[in-house]
Length: 122
Image (cartoon, rainbow, N blue to C red; front, side, top):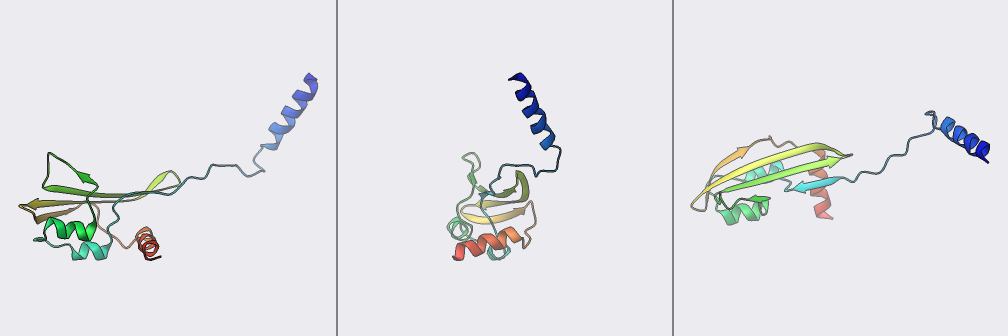
């Protein structure tokens, strides 16, 4: 009986020499945050009210109670276990009016943004 187990083990080990394709688990595409397209960013102007900004971009991902006049919009796309795209936009308000816009990552017309917009139209 032991000889059969050893023989089967050797045969199975020889099969994994690289000639067979490796099985890897499927990794789901994960989108987190608010995707802001170039069109949305172009409409964003200083002097807009918080409600106008919220109607244009949606609710901010991070609303800090200690910095109520600062809204942070963050977006990341993870494909195959690695982050392939990041966006970060920080908006500053003074008395309900948009005063400053900080783009940490310049917005580009990415394939992910195009796909996201196209999915929203379906």
